[in-house]
Amino acid sequence: MDVGELLNYQPDRGAKRLRDDDDDDPRSKKVGRELARRLERDDGEDPSGDRKKILEKLMDDDEDADDQEGEPVDESSVKKMILTFEKRSYKNQELRIKFPDTPGRFMETELDLNDIIQEMHVIATMPDLYHLLVELNAVHSLLGLLSHENTDIAIAVVDLLQELTDIDTLHESEEGAEVLIDSLLEGQVVALLVQNMERLDEQVKEEADGVYNTLAIIENMAEFRPGLCTEAAQQGLMQWLLKRIKAKIPFDANKLYCSEILAILLQNNDSTRELLGELDGIDVLLQQLSVFKRHNPATAEEQEMMENLFDALCSCLMLAANRDRFLRGEGLQLMNLMLREKKMSRTSALKVLDHGMIGPEGSDNCHKFVDILGLRTIFPLFMKTPKKMRKAGTVDKEHEEHVCSIIASCLRNLKAQQRTRLLSKFTENDCEKVDRLMELHFKYLEAVQLADKRIEGEKHDMVKRGEILDDVMEDEFYLRRLDAGLFVLQLLCYIMVEISNSGISQLQQRVHQILNLRGGSVKVVRHIMREYAENIGDGKSEEFKESEQKRIMDLLENF
Image 1: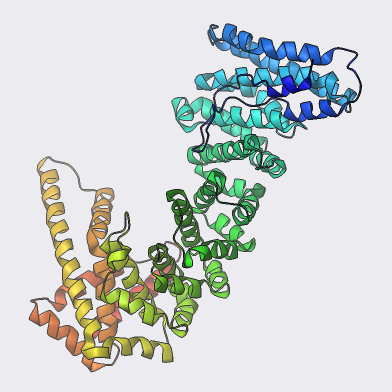
Image 2 (image 1 turned 120 degrees about the vertical axis):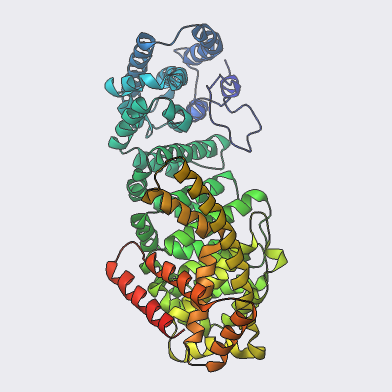
């Protein structure tokens, strides 16, 4: 018997999540590649006839699988399956310890073990029975196999876990899902998955698939239980993701998936944002994004990765300590260059600048932005919304919101010489920027008035039906108004009030002149700003909220 036959045989591997770039049936894979390679290295004849037995065993695999398909899946058959799995796992471990240098002696048990892992995929169709995996200690045994010497076995376990944690399956039985996820987390599943990924060679297609499915397990669990993101990041996942993202290998599906998982970990989570900052993750993100400064992404997938990395960066900048890292890593210079280069990255660069400069924590970034001549970049974007910027999914409102927010942040944070430079921009060319400011003010005022009319109509109907307008409903209506353009209108009014209080009479006169000319009203501006002040706050400090409200009210006094 030639071991080459063994190598070329491909038994059925059970169902597995498809990758976009899978050409072949994803279930077909060479089982025991590593063992077969070791067998080939063995010299001399095989006295025990092990190879012959193994080949016969492989040939019988498909027939056995067909027989089992007819069996009904119930509690007793699952128990029997788990028991068989435990026996085969133990037997394989025992023979590996006994004959570490003679693969022929334990190869058959490894194939048996692989078969039972494939059979266990059927449990994923019965999430109500997940508790059996926990009660009979199978979860613990499966996690143990993630560090099996044969990576094929570890990958088979990853495939199984990926199917067991499929998000649709988890939602079919919340109770079964809770039990399984609890057990996996108790067994430090993320740390074990990361250790396994570190030894996989992504040049080998099967092992690259293993990495992809590992990331799918993490995504499934994070979607089912968002709270585990902090724990997962601290168990080595954050470090591995950053290392994989900056690896100098061609773009592929795994790199895209890594960027997606990274963005998920950082959502609404200050602990993971802090960890990323400590691991020099801001520099990694800036290095990866710098590629798109002068070049557009080559494919839709690469564009998706770029957006994921920008989202991750925006998330990180919600944490004050990361603003400083962004400043030191010359993030402002990179974003400013992106705005000038007019490539696809421009829209996202604008969003990053907005996140980096907003609030009192953005003060240093605002000053630096003026120093690197950022005002020359931002004001042309304020004067005219570029047509090229209207890429898929980007609308004028989003662009105008970020630009107005950046200018408002600068007016709030800048001091001394930098503030003077900013205000002088508004007086240039016969106050053309004030004219544009007022044009946008009336555009958004009209949009908000339309939305208010619709909302008032809905409220009237609700009262007629005897429904109660509670705080939750009022908050929902307020969010709808913000979305309709109220937030941009508030920013525009804030800029208006700030420049009117700058001590430059020319600016105040121009604002009032245009308001009177177009039938606007100071009262309306004051009302918008009071509503803005009432709802202000970063959700963290009451002190900040009170001081900011007082500051806005003082500005209104002199408007």
